[in-house]
Structures are given as C-alpha cells and as structure tokens.
Length: 337
Image 1: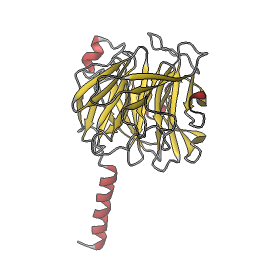
Image 2: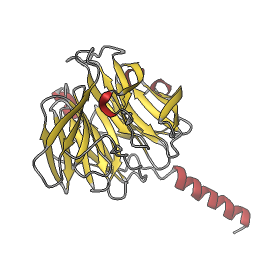
Image 3: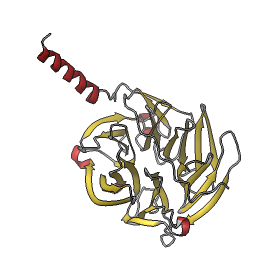
Image 4: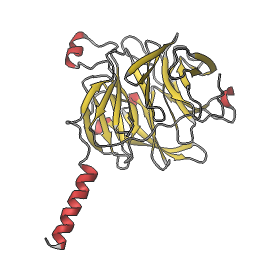
C-alpha cells in the first residue's frame, strides 16, 4: 500500500472514529423501574456513589435509584430539582415551590430532614422553581417559571434565572436573567468559557460567554434554533458530553437532539418512545449511559399506546459517547443538619 493511500485510509478511520461513533438507531433503551412518573424531571448522576437522583414535580417526590432499587422522599409541594452538596454525603439542595431548601437523606436510611433556606418570586403567585445546575465553580444556577394551567399555558416573562452567591448565601439570590418564561436547561463547556441556556418557549438554545473567575455571563447569542431543522415541540433539559456537544430533551418531540457544541449544527436525533421528554443526563460507572426523564401528565390513552415508555425514567446504552460528570454545589453555605 502506498504512503498516500495509507494516509487516506488512516484519515478515513479517524473521521469514522470522530463522527461515526454515535449510535442513535441501534442504541438500547430500557426502563430503570416500573414506576410511571407524572412529571419526571431533573436527573442527576452521583458518580461518587453510583446513584441516579431525579424528581417528580407533580407528585412532590425526590427519587433515588440505587443498586437496582427505587426509593423516594414524599414532600408537600412541587419539587423541581435535587443536587448534592460537595463534600457532604447525604445532603442536597432542592427547589421546593419557590423555596430553596436542603434535604438530608443518607444512603441506606429511610429518614430524611428538610430545612427551608430562602424564598424567591414572592410577588409572583403561582411561580415555582424549574431546572437548576451547579457550574464548574459549584455555584448554583436555578430558574423559575410562571404557573402552568391544565392546558399547558404559562404566562410569559414571569420567571428569573438566579445564582446562589455564597458571599451572602441565603440573604439574597442574585437575579441574573429576569423576564424569562420557562427557565430550563443549563450546561457549561469543558474549559468553562461558554454557558448554554434554554428558555423553552423561545425554541432556542442560547449561549453566553462565561467567566469562571467571576462566575458571570455576558454576550448572549442564539446558538441553535428549532426552526432551523423544523423540530417540533420545545427544548427542555440539557446535558453535555466529553466532546463538548449538547444533548437536548425535546418536549413534545419524542426525541433527544444531539447538537454540536461548537458549530451549533444538528448532529442527530435519538428517538424516545415517549412524546414528552423532559430532561437528560449522562451517568453509569463509565459515564456512557444517557438517563432520560419523561412526563405522563395530560397524555391520552391513545398517546400512551403510541409511546409505550411515557412517564418512565429511561437508561440509554450503546450510544458510543461518554458524558461529563455533574457538578455538586459548593459547601460554603451548607452545614450538616
């Protein structure tokens, strides 16, 4: 074989390894449990303990899936996210209505304790927390949304994206982006220079310059628009893989979108047998599983038949890509309780 031909073959193999490794249609999808969620959301993979956490907003529950066993904490109002605190086993931050609270829930223990920390949007009745993430510094970014009626209508502009500033802790949360409608997916790239953000009704993924020294954002731009590829529904939760590419839950689209984190181009579609796909995160011991939450609220019997995994929490294997680890919240403002 000539050197030129050898180089061409090698280049082809490199291209195949870089761009052809992701397996959408041949990936394996299984239910992690038989339970049907009304409003499954906010999956978080705890890589230190190999535990999957998530919530059911409407049933007011925080779940954990540990050693093939599903358990939950029953709360008294909508719970929108659950994120562990760095360096403290069994301590989490949760969004409870519009209250930020801590949850003490140790592995292999049935008991739990909730402590309310602070409340936002007190002048906006009906609002609640929605999606949240910790950034690379461990700062909590959490957003709110207006009341969603039975028909799915949400008043525009009543939500805010907040940041927990641990200089003042719970005296006040910093309102970073006011006037959003449904504050949703968040992700940061590997070198912490970009923050991706979703306000669902815009049908867009925005990107900001992110300054890791100040944990601040600037220079908002539209990164990906659903209209570009005629994508149905809206973007919901989001995560990022080790290649810096985005995986976006497509609510009312029965799929997860794979979008280049550099060019903003659609790379592929992972079909999901549930129409209302709400959020995604990578997990598993090798970080090569994609966990997907879905929603059954408002789904007709006909749609259940069409989408048989509606309301299930799903594990997708065989995609050929690994994800990044979820960030925990920095511990300065939190003490064992």
